[in-house]
Amino acid sequence: MADTNKPLLIKRYASRRLYNTETSDYVTLEDIAIFIREGREVQIVDLKSGDDLTRQYLLQIIAEHESRGESVLPVDVLTDLVRSYTSQAASVVPQFLQASFDMLREGQTKAMENIGKASPIANMPGFEAMRAQQEAFFKAMTGGMIPGAGKPEGENGKDSDDLGEIKDQLAALQEKLSKLGK
Image 1 (cartoon, rainbow, N blue to C red):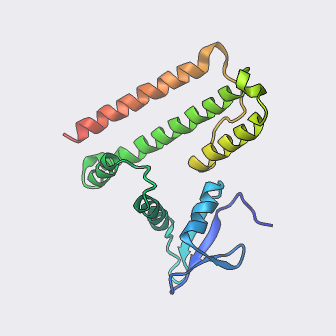
Image 2: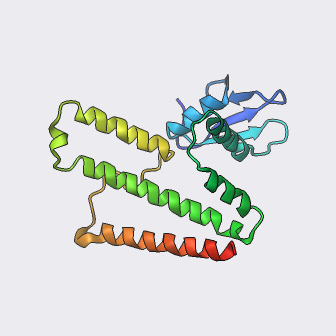
């Protein structure tokens, strides 16, 4: 049985074929995308050199989805990313993106928690199945990283204070980016 706590090791052969070391079979980029959507971490290495190729293949998966019309990244965001590679903003961009995705995951977690709370919808037949599908969707969208899922809300409005703090941090990051872009 596979150990899902450690990354799934995929080896790239000289023929550029990708080999799943757990199942001893060849996989495609779409297979790798499915593993990731299911919450599995992957590591792709070149068999001969041992170089880590994970980032390169993840970018290729994103590019293929974008080219098929499954656009998630607006052109403005892609343009800003390209600009960030040639500017001083490159040092701020990774932290900004990480903070943004963390905030997205937290918002999705809160939404899932609120769906199940004393709502008339919660009594509808099939609601639990719908909720489970929504959770699976959020998990896939966030790479399986939904922090605090199932945790109760903090007392005395602590959660809303945290959200305000995150918004302030995001605004500060945006201000820094705009200053660096000038």
